[in-house]
Length: 305
Image 1 (tube, one colour):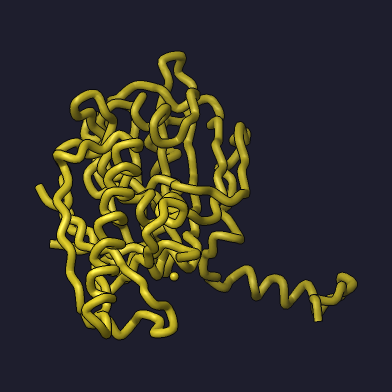
Image 2: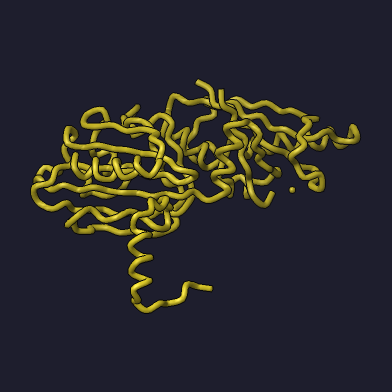
């Protein structure tokens, strides 16, 4: 079972130009033979003779990383194993020329990514992807991607810390669209994901509500709870050991107030208290914390069925 412990902030020679000489031509020709690695900044080539319908190069908050089929559970569109991360997105939507198929657009980019060493995380075709309107409206927020369920395909892969996604679909009017996303999470998101996996992450807290509301990690937890209605959680509030009995009493009171604030905040986000269980742990030894912050607390989130 994975444990999530999240971080809450503010709590306790430029290339010179060269003339086109014979040498430059030779060098350029040689470089064209080199298999250069892909990066999110460089992007991918446009589909031959396709028209670019949408092009984005921007920062994103809570960008969905989908590694399973889309489905609807109790009226909520969800996907097992989904993540919502902050980062930089490069997106291109192509309208393929007449005579092409959704499979051709899909295979063009997926084959390219695989030759570049991108590791496949998940892929699906046709009905195994779920409903096309889920992808169009709930994931990409692009109505043009709403097409025929049997004529769709999705791929997501990863290389280093960058995610590559491809979605291709045929609309009812016969038009073919292929979307290509290159998403690079910010460093703190990658650190957070690693720490959540190892169970060593820390979510700093004070007893007021402001720090809770600013927590990226707690917001991601809220999003997962709202998407997956079957998910419950144990929330453990930790503290270091106080020096005196009076400090113990004071810290325990602060932790109880903190619990009430967390419950109130989660209720406001649509999460029922019945799905939560709390525990208070005083005297927890955590060497990753800053000894200069006194008192301070941290929250451990344990997902439960």
